[in-house]
Image (tube, rainbow, N blue to C red; front, top):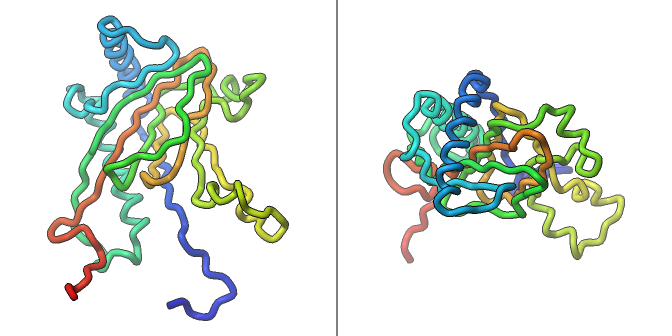
Length: 232
């Protein structure tokens, strides 16, 4: 039940932005590793020169100290965001929980390639970590794409309501329905898996290299369902 109040800001969308302190050294190694993996895969099967996505089994394929550093950072960052997002929803102040990587992969793109609007399944949280991209001054100077060159664009829950909605001064809060996250090497964006997003077209001298992953979170014991209903 809601108490009397002129405004209840309900159903916010939690997003976490984290920076990897060891990014400069780790990213340089990962670019070389990913490039070698891509070359080996494409030598066998061919594929596009402007876009490549690995299989989502990198957790089992890469054995490297720098990779382990990155994975620890990803897991720790998601843990922080999950705890903050669930404040007030979990019954316990510091409940025990387990986290499981449901898939982790890398993508390399350039020459205008992009990834259309989509969501992720089989998980509650997803993330995108930037490994490499053109410097910001060079990236945003593209004559057509400008500041949107290579960004990850997130569409808020109101976005799919705009097509048939009346737009006037009173619902201006609906009309800014997306946010662009610039690709910054070393930056991780953690977001709910249900949130629609896309990788905007990218043109650059350097490949746009990102690591994406899906993660599920489970109660340490008992059911994952917060609300249990007694049988009738």
